[in-house]
Amino acid sequence: MLETDTKAPVNWVVTATWVLSRLARESLEGNAMPSPKPIQIILARQLASSLATPILIVDTEGTLIYYNEPAEVILDQRFDETGEVPVAEWTGLFAIADEERNPVAQEDRPMMMALSERKPVSRTVWMRCGHREWRHMNITAFPLIGQDGQFLGAKMIFWEV
Amino acid sequence: MQVTLWGTRGSLATPGPEMARYGGNTSSVGIVGREGTMLVLDAGTGVRRLAATVPESVRRVDILLTHLHMDHIQGLGFFAPLYRRDLEVHIWGPGSATLRLKARLMRYLSPPLFPVSLSELPCKLTFHEVPCDEVDIGEFRVTSALVCHPGPTVGYRIAEAGGAVSTYLPDHEPALGNLRFPCLPRAWTSGGALAAGADLLIHDGQYSAAEYREHCGWGHSSLAHTLDFGTLTEVKQLVPFHHDPSHSDIDLDRLMAEAIEAAKPVYKVTPGTEGAIFEL
Image 1 (spheres, rainbow over the protein chains, first blue to last red):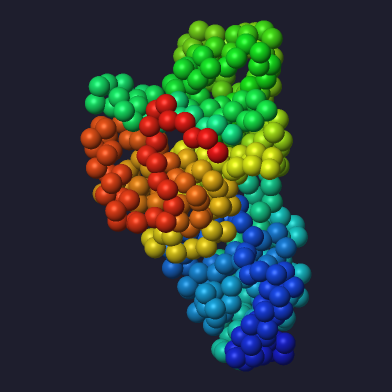
Image 2: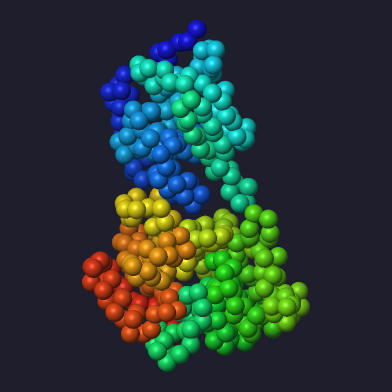
């Protein structure tokens, strides 16, 4: 049976949590400057920012370092407001279920598999952000690997079925 | 460090009386450290004259190539120190996904394009792939990173121990795909970390704003973007160069003046002219 992700709170709670966690991180780190990005990641963001396809980009740690405007609609958040989001936070934003409506474990989600196995993964799922309606989506995630073989992160594309 | 511009022209060597002041030789910059370490940034046609300044007493020269487009390597075979048996020459530059730096360079430095093969050069030649971790070359700490330009292309940040920082980004299009450039922070801007706070930034300034619109994606910057990039990275002094072959001295005087007037930078801007020397 399809289950609601009880860890996904309503949006204002999510936003407040993010703000607090970001403030805490910034306080610990002493500044709010994001780390310099490899050129492949910069170009990936520039491409994503000019596409109508919802796209997420994560770094090697799984931190959500960018999502474009179409993805903002799905996540119901704005990148300019959240900035980078740690993996534990953004993966809790939405629930994912398989075609038979069984919940998909975090480690079996396409982005997590692209990160851990460094290979492209595509699957059709049911997806729900917060308490909004379920959407039938195809999710494709693939690793970003530089010319010298350096693993840089991964990119995920949503496609409404 | 002392920084000398030996080649300031982009794309194609452009000799001629109407280009005499800004110069017609393609990209090459020499850097000499306080302890005498010599760095050569790119080996365009300007490197031939640079070669004449390498003292007999020098035993090592490092050539830092940003990429292998012809205007950045055409002078390499004419760099006289390569023919000195007593000299160590280290060439740093980007390989590709399928070829190492040496193999890529040999495509040019071998017949039929050039009569002498790399393997026939008498100097002690060593190749280093970039980008790599920070490396110390003499009194310099050199940082390289891939930047936005077609094909594998790097920029260099050169910091003298306890001294000044120079950044070299001769072919660079940080505004590509960024319609509101420079709205993104430095961390999200190509070359941003390399140039941050540099005492001297030598940067691509090939096009006027109108020309850039016609050449978007070719890997170069408009002067306006160059000045904005200097502001974003908070450099102390900017040297726009890699001048377009179609721009005469008169054109460049006008384009530079217009761009500076429009941007009103808070830092010093010195248009790149062949032979200019910067003491940092």
